[in-house]
Image 1: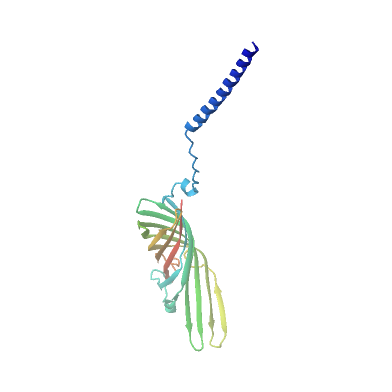
Image 2 (image 1 turned 90 degrees about the vertical axis):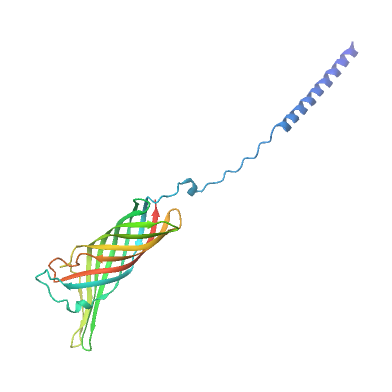
Length: 259
């Protein structure tokens, strides 16, 4: 009886060990058969520029600087009862001019752009007369706030070529004339005049321009557009003795910020 019990215990022990070994082998086989998961690829970090849609040319903000040269003209006002000869004022000398402006440019269609803004402008002219015993000279500055309204036709390539025309309203802010003269007796006398009497508070000019722009990034372009400005109305009021105008050639350049 004891022998039979011992045999049964040995058999059960062997059977359980065999079962454990078989289970371990089965688990190992399952692990081998299971396909290995491919390591997850690191998600490439997308830059902000990829997450944002490319900027269109529907709207742009511009900053512009325009240095140049003025060409003053003056003539007697034949329509005024106060008209008088121009005299030495016909010899006034062209001087450097400049303007700064900021504004918006809108896309009308693929070829036409509309541009408007606000800016500051300075016109300047001078006169100088010298002889052995006497001299007379002055410089005159006209400062304006101006509102340009322009249309541009553009031809799009790597560089955008453009032709433009428009009008410009100029509102006089300050006027200043400084000068000096030498009397026959040798005295040197300086003078200054800042009165705006007789000056037209609002004048209008026509502008014509041609140039190009280059878009060097998604959000910015640089432009260079020389411009000719032709003054339509006189610097002086209607009944002034003279008709005075300041035409100018300017070299406009700056930046577009595309929205």
